[in-house]
Amino acid sequence: MNGFPALRRGLIALVAVTLVGLPGTAGAVQPARTTPPEQRQAATSRSTERELQRRLDAVHDAGMPGIQAAFRRGDRSRARAAGVADTRTERPLRAGFHHRIGSVTKTFVATAVLRQVETGRVELDAPVGRYLPELVPGERGERITVRMLLNHTSGIADYADVLFGSIARGSLADLDKNRFRYHSPAELVATGLNQPPTNAPGESWSYSNTNYVIAGELLREVTGQSPRRHITREIIHPLGLRDTYFPGANPFVPGPHSKAYEALYQLPKRRGEYSVYNMTWARSAGALISTPSDLNRFYRALFRGKLLAEESLAEMRRTVPVPGSPAMRYGLGLMRLDAGPCGTLWGHDGKVWGMSTLSLHSADGSRQLSYGMNLTDYRRLDDNGLPIPHPIDRQVESLQNNVLCDAAGSTSTPRQRAPERRTVHGLTLAGAS
Image (cartoon, rainbow, N blue to C red; front, side):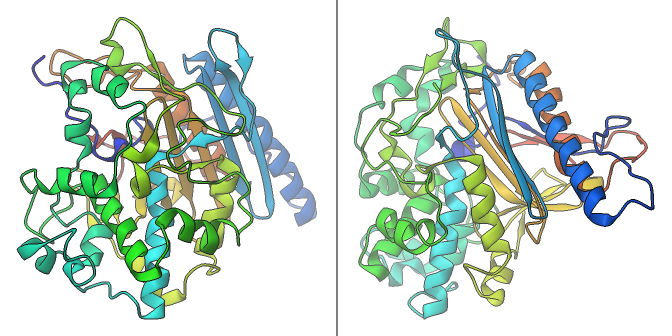
């Protein structure tokens, strides 16, 4: 099919991230000026909680089998879910079900690498070949720096484009073929390095899972521990993230979880179901399992200085342009979205077959929304191979605007002419020109 979209860089969620401030949809209560502040906060929180459930129900009604989310405003947080975890049995999806978070893993990995920068074991602008001369040999190892891995400017191609090449033919064959396959880090990195570079080192941004598998091997080299063990001991356990873990080669999700449905743009005759999958293909680029509440706790700790020193967090927030997007920039394992009336939001998104995730936060972690859905690539394609907007997209947009943005005080923003929307790597972004 002409124009069929290439494999999604990083397999990030195909979800709307428009955040434009919708008119007349505010869910927050507007108390009288004489109401004590603590009562106003409680009333607003209750209203936002009801709005969260209503908006999740609307996403489900629009065609998403199941969605779960967690929001935080100040010190108050809530988690809710809507829809089903299994379309055959109609088993309900519950808040707190374990969910494959895909590329949100990259923020954890970047944080772990920056902690090694703080110890002096790693230099951000040192060539990666200094640490991993056999994994990234020759001139590329000398020219590509650690920073370029973390901000996706290395020019190293994404191995996933090769591993799952059948999707360019509208086929689930490679997804099925790799379901129980074990992939070593060396194999994945070699596959990416053997493809033509996307750009010269440092020249431009090009999303690649290969970068973060290399970053994981950098952690292994300088700490003497696997990235799985190191991140668990240094970040996950100290933060009390009880439902966050790397599955290793275990293809099953050990805790309560949903099915994972891949529609592949409605091209196959049936949806694929991939809740059972060997995630060694993603490793430190996207293998983590977590929950929306755990993600909010992680990002809140990150942005409040509990994981990194102020200087390191500033490095993480040094961003580069994302080609074609007026609203999105990328730092070190961190996305920055200029979200109109919602202000500047930070976080990451992720997608593995059948599960998508988005985690968005204000700079200080006081406003947070993380959610996961269990159907991916649900849109159909037009004659040019571009995704056609789906009713799910509109309801996800409303979820974000009415839960996350209203908490920022954008409850009465009048609607202006809609800003230009552009789709970049699967993200529909609307931002200032």
